[in-house]
Length: 118
Image (cartoon, rainbow, N blue to C red; front, side, top):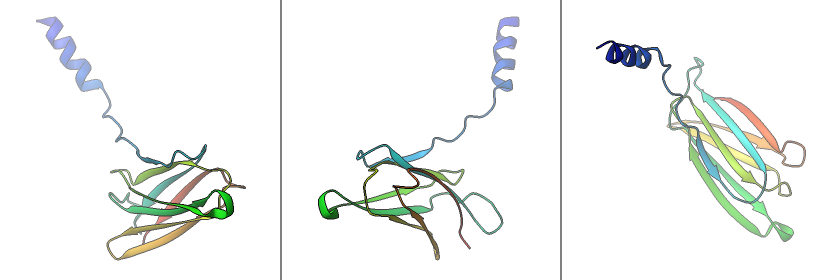
């Protein structure tokens, strides 16, 4: 009986699991961009869409469109970006709200963005 009580109490003491980070991987390199998207009140926005077109390769002829949605904490990551590519423009949208973020992979290979949609 005490073993069951001990097991139940340990379950109650555990902290809730953090939501899994939404990640899309281009598999082109080691660069990345981490996003935290919030509303005007500073609350995380679930399912905000982050879109980017990556132009890479010889004369930037190759192109790849990537899109990822934020998790319940308003967080998402675009990973596997090439170190040698044209500067990236991320379009972040949710309903009728939109904003952009810029990343120059040469100077900011591992970028973090706190974005506010108003």
